[in-house]
Length: 415
Image 1 (cartoon, rainbow, N blue to C red):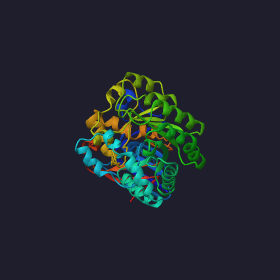
Image 2 (cartoon, one colour):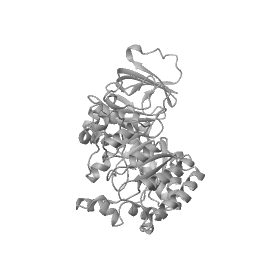
Image 3 (cartoon, rainbow, N blue to C red):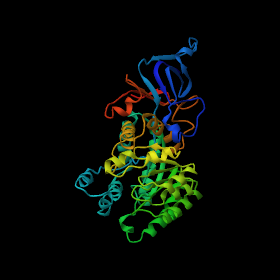
Image 4 (cartoon, helix red, strand yellow):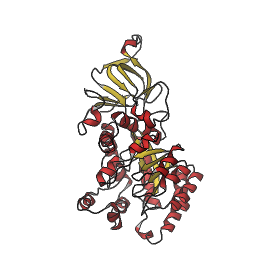
């Protein structure tokens, strides 16, 4: 079956040939066709162009024509960093934050990640699956067409495997692309508090081989930061991971200059994420790499943390991705349109830059840039059709308004 969109006000993020990412000053440029058509063939993009050049499709069998006058079409968001498989919420910690406790203080009291780990241990796989399925349905309605999901609330071999099996089940159930990441090194469990190296050894000697044996993860992640895992810990974990063909992604420099960026680059990490603390050394390391710097505006907003120096990074020539960090403790939202707004408001990114950062560059950060993230022939037909809005700048501007009329995933509209 073919679907033909006609009279598209603006068709955004179009590419004749697909580049891996957009970086530096090019992030401020958005490829657009005004008054456009777009042809979908089954689940793929077949053709697009100006209405002035609209081919004759009268001989096409089973063609559905949709007039979207006044609407904008863009690729769906790719959310390259989430923790959306979890048990329970952490609103009590939210109140503690309001009262002035820091992220580290809450963690030291047994809150934070350790709190989520306790709740997850008690939950069944079915309970975790049902909760995550609801969250995925929500983010699809917000325009997300691909998502990465991390483990990391297990912190024991069996609980980590439980999380990853839930993610595997979700891959089979939902229409959007899902990438799974093993994050056993998310925090040191309470029972290993005085012997953290024993927990690192458990990850290396038992968890990674089990995860690889069952084929449960696309990537591996480590929280390399102050109070969590050191550069030396991270180096050892990643050295083991590459032996099992797990490509790294790193939580880095959220709480301090941790060295996480550099160790991530050393191991060819697909992305390094958070990056509130970035200086010349980190920027230089990233400039000579294939690693995507990924900012998580929702976490910095929710935790009232310093904002990553995004303008310095872009001015230096780096690409930037923006992801939601959807999780129960520090960013309880997967709304990527709101993430775009935070990118503009708090990081002084332009609308063009945040669109590039939430589609094309996040597709790279998930390893799916060849199939997702832009309007290009042969790519998956994952599309957002907006309501009638004045222009694409209105998307981040109207930060609480629902401006999505339809979401298409794999060539099918989602109810």
